Figure 1: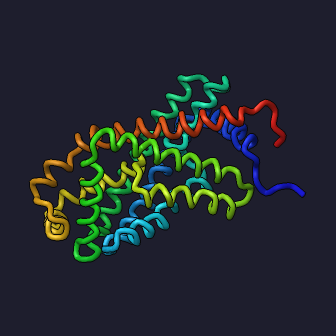
Figure 2: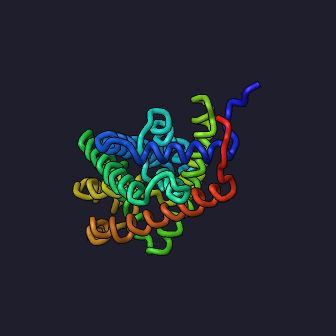
Figure 3: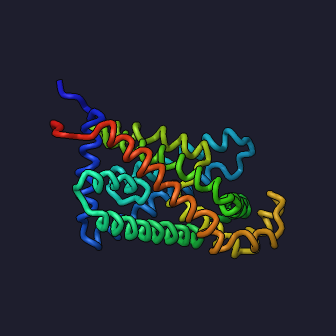
Length: 282
């Protein structure tokens, strides 16, 4: 009887073949698939914020967020989209000689920027929809709070958190790809993503929604006033800390570097060394 899953050596071989396909995507497909991945992750992020913004119990809020956020990765894994954090594992195909370094870097840059575009456009659509008005502006205030927390990290914390995040995300991607049926794919990717969200680790593409959404919310005095009322900020603190410059320097840069190391070096190369394929039966 045929297994309904792939064994580790087959997973790594399939991942290598997938990297070749990713490296050779037409430019317009790479951009569009990157855009949709950013959009899907942003939808999961927005949904998790909405679910927990009135929950006072810390553990319960984290658990609820962890149950909602994985929807984004589920959508892109079934529909098919290009996510930068998963593509960090393309480095194994470079080591294996199947693609060139320049092909990998081209994919990373295009997919990263496309993910950002999809995430920011989704944030703008959600902001424009009036979604942040929920709970008398409470969701807008919570969106500011989340963004403040992320731009308040020091470089080392953000970097280490990025490493841990993409260890879990890339394990989720590989586990999902191990299944041969849709239910198996969804079930396999859910739990590692849930753990990363509950743990509060930093994901660069998710933050392409969380922080721009916070910046947009901070442009509305109603949400700023509500954030000051609920969380004890001052308007000056918010305007000083929640800036585009801090978005890039205090979060996106260290988190992206951490994601590359966690996904590419630790998971990607680590599992490649363990399961280096010779010839694997399909």
